[in-house]
Image (cartoon, rainbow over all chains, first blue to last red; front, side, top):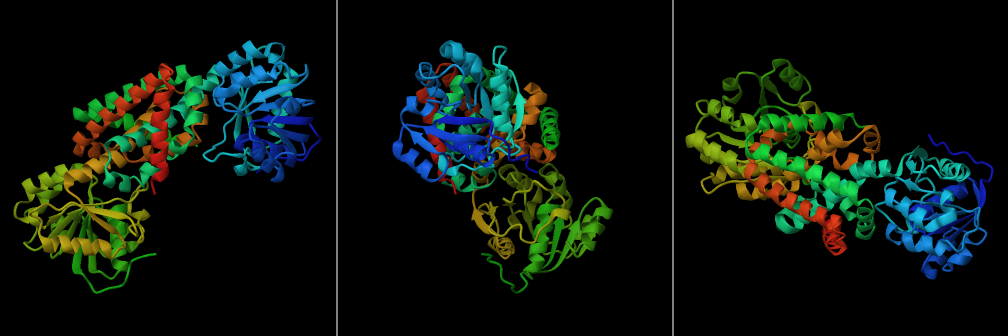
Length: 292
Length: 292
């Protein structure tokens, strides 16, 4: 099944800024593939960083960003979306002309514009990326070398993205078994708004309805289908605040459509309009049954 | 783990009207527990009924309702909610004074009123029930003797429900390993509206949004979290039409609250009101994390 093959080194030093599940798993996978010589982590908490080195997730780690990115060939920004502006600004004076920068953020269009505004001459070597790998768990402790096997990684290069930088990032992902997809940044955001961001909003609000309207009995009965459908409401609120902020326009537009659909469905129930109910549910069922 | 013990026969002949997963599994479980002497099925399709007998799900089966309920001690109505009025009317002239009637419908308040209006003298021996067992699959072919082990079965007796009838139905469930819960019919409907009926509406509408707003890319990306959250949108539209009809008031009221919550969340995103977003998501996450 796995597409991984041990191979020649693709690059020497990779630096991961903000080591969590996503960066840690990429580090483990790159090492396993023999694709890089050295992986350095940067973070805010030296104790946590020391633990990551002890666990063998990365080779070394420091809270000093200048030291972390010195002589680095590839910089992976894996900090929360809300911190990207700060990180870009800190990076600008530190990076050399040839370094490739990439990220793993869940929303891309605004981020690409931010990168264009702040990275200046380095912008063409910024390759925006988003590994679409489930991450209910977080922290580098949960890292797995096989997290990206057969999982999609979306890259959203723009017209001025350097072809060599794009190619290197592509190889760094494909050697980990990932399936690469290239999209326009806004297309990525529209697709993810529908398939991921809106479902998270829906799940949070459904649990909040239980908080507002449900008694003790309802909580007991929430253990079945309700429990499954709201699994993603256990995701990090901070992360999702940042995603909703960064993908505001797509998410708001979709919420409008979704609310409109719910209103019509509600009216159909209230007015015994069974034809409309059946039309919506049959269309939905046949589409759901057809998803792989 | 299982609470089942082989025991003395509780009753002689049980007749199941409308043999599907729910009735078929109860039949298998009752037989396994040695709780009944004979199980008869009634349905519309003799070929399907013959298959159920061949498979050993029931002892005999007929399309003749009079024959099916003759000399029956307990009649289980497991036909779709939308057919209950017809079935009650057909039953009235056929049932003897001592027969106990129960059902397995997913909505209870309207059904209890319907039963009161149509069953006449037999109404006190009608014990309204709802086994809350996941049923994405359907048909008696999917029946399992252990479907009800450690699953909740809600009974919603009213003040004039006969105590002996209630006790017999309770025993017929508890000998199958079910955990019995007794509620007012309207309380049942409110609890299920929140924990099951609304989640189904939400899932159907989310898939319908994919139909309306999503392109080829979105369908591809719908394989992850979207796929999980919309699993219940593969449920039977006919069944859910009946449930929405029967539990109209609770579902419409909850949809109003839910739409209101979504509107506020949408505004908070649109207006960069991160405090409100965080409040909702943190409250939802902590509640979700606390569900068993």
